[in-house]
Image (cartoon, rainbow, N blue to C red):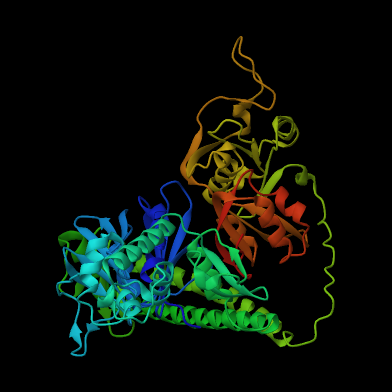
Length: 621
């Protein structure tokens, strides 16, 4: 399947990309020639800019799966950081897209979408980093050289007289001049010539002034279409066979379906536009999924091995590492180490057994080794989940070619009910049960009936937040109390208000009272708190939902990510967004044997946006 954007497509896409202006680069992913920039939008939420070097670029909802970061992406992430996007623009009518950032010095990220293409990071006109390291037949190195944008003609800005004058010196026929010399590309060059009712193969210099006027009018019509595009999928028998940014004459009478954006049309064509039967397409998707999972398994296995070797090499060179770290802390430099990130106090040190090790010189040698061992444990956990996912995919592949019987979807059975199902609840990462009210009446009932001397009371600093009881809270660690405070915030009005973060606190049971000060009324569901409140501030509104075990049976649980990942093998992470939570309940019900209503009941009260999917096929709402 071949897909290369035209300059007109890029002009329309650059208009769509204006939503990224003012946002911040959040994460960068790269796998071979596929590059993704995750952008934190100024109004909240995230989107991804997906690019295949030299071929295409489009905007899509932020993906949830773990993705690779090849060497170019690693360097780009380090050199670019998390800057604010100042501008997004197309250069003239060339297939060149520029992102402009401002840090200590202005930076530009350039996407060249022609020939073999390239992605380059510029500072003050010089190439700091490039995906392709050399240019031209002479293989001239690019990095460190001056970068010059091409000087070409933008036919959409020409007057009628300028069009006639430029065509008079052209050396090709009309359609080739428009397509190649003027950069319209074949599809749009033919469209303009057809709208002008001219012969496409006639010599360009032969056009009269009147015909030049017709061509100018056709170009004005094309420009009007760019200002108000009509993106669509091209279909044959219900299958996607292509896309179009505008309504073109060559597509008249053909089957199509409207798309919400050109980015959506391009993404759908890339993912589904293959001449295969539904069965072949399903198998191809499974094979792609398996390939990604196996690549991830390989990367995680390598990470597990390398972090373990590096930790052991620190202990094998303990005295040398301790001296280097001490020199870095006291003098800001060391003869055998190189500073990687001065702001984060990171430096690299070459050790024969573990290769190059990145050290945090605020810590001693032991704590640096422990940090690496912790990374190895994280890699081991991810590796076990990926291997489980591989087994599931291989199982699906083994039955993909079997004749399919009529679908019989078993009705999911409700899970076993417990007393806390009448409330909001979750299990902390340390195993403590946290229960919260759903409304004023249940807040009142919960505190009166279940708050005991060994518990803790939790509330968010937002009007309408639930009252929470941490059972056995006197024995709870900081992780439990922080997660309980985050849970109180998740189920408050902060979620509906689409806040990014907030604060909550915990107190002892004896600090909670229904008796107000003299002459002060305490409303139903409200409580008077006396004495010191123990705050957790800047808590992020991020949650996860997955299937856990409780007293030997399954329960669907929603709560802070750290709590859910401690108890569930497969789960979905989400944050405040625009998607209907009922859609997440329906999508999850297809993957776990729980009724969608039961899943929906545990979700926060408002729209959401999925940011990650662990241990199950990716969910896109």
